[in-house]
Amino acid sequence: MRDKILIVDGIETERAELVRMLEQDYGILEAGDGELALKLIEKHNEELAAVLIKLMIPKVDGLKVVESMHANKWIEKVPVLIIDKASSTAMYEKCYELGVWDFLHKPFEKSFIRHRVVASADSFQQRQELQKKVIAQTQTMKKQYQVIQKQSKDIEKSKLDMMDVFGAVAEYRNAENTNHIRHVKAITQLLAEQVMKSYPEYGLDARKIQMIVAVSALHDIGKIAIPDHILLKPGKLTEEEMELMRSHTTKGCEILNTIQETWSEEHAKFATEVCRYHHERYDGNGYPDGLQEDDIPISAQIVALADVYDALISDRVYKKAYTKDQAYHMIVVGECGVFSQKLLGCFRDVKDEVEKVVSR
Image (tube, rainbow, N blue to C red; front, side, top):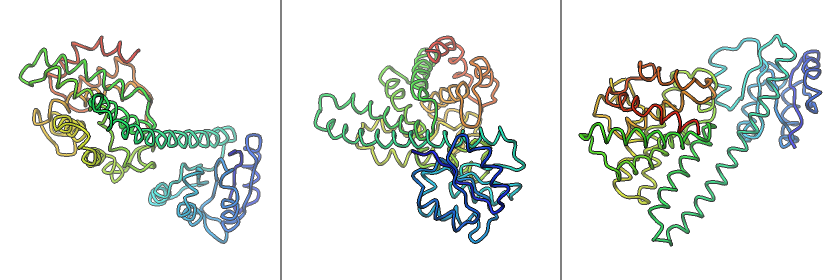
């Protein structure tokens, strides 16, 4: 049971201040230097709910303690919160790269620190549980696929189910609302059907729409390859972090290439389009290739709008949810990138149906 907090600070009075703030919630371990801290972490890493550590401490400094925790993979089990007055941006980035969960800035306010530590410990454990579910789900997926290979009469349906499983893995990895994949698929269906009716020049039919809806579950599969400290970062990303986040589009295609034999050539084509191009924008200001107008496949344009709308109306680690009306307005006026007027017209036509779907 993770019911202990380790406080590492070379100044005894400051340790005592934190002890008074947290002792009602946790058993407390104390270390006045980094050498003792490492011994306590090694002995109690299965019991620790969090480690609070100052960077400037005797014998072994705080950064070296964090580096040791990273090397021993203890930091994957225990959230580390740095006690800090003011560090450089480079130090923040270094700590986050090593897996530090958060920073606690002095001077302390008692109730704030208590709630911050408790919330950090709880959030970290929730993430651990999500990761366990992902591992369990992946194991289940592998077993299911072995069975599916022997059942040719159900193979097509099973392939579609596999897309949902892969999408769910990315969803759990990203710690998002578990309705996101379902919402994106439902909105994609409504938009695609309206495009088929209003703009036959795109060549959509019921069969193609079914495939686009199915592969829409895979649009963010590349986020599996993005590090936790970037994917789950609640604050603004640095330019370097943003560039790595953007790479989920191309990394997703790399992942799809490893499983391309499990579906038809046409399914693979739509999946690759959706995965690579769902962040392209009609005016060319998207990524990864800066495609413009209808150089962007219609499948990716549709899924992009569905993804943006559901992201806006959902809570994320970096923002609170907008209302449905706010989200609709932001998309129409181009606050989330430019979409084609044809697609926005289709969105307007199905707006009420979309709102019913996400409300359910």
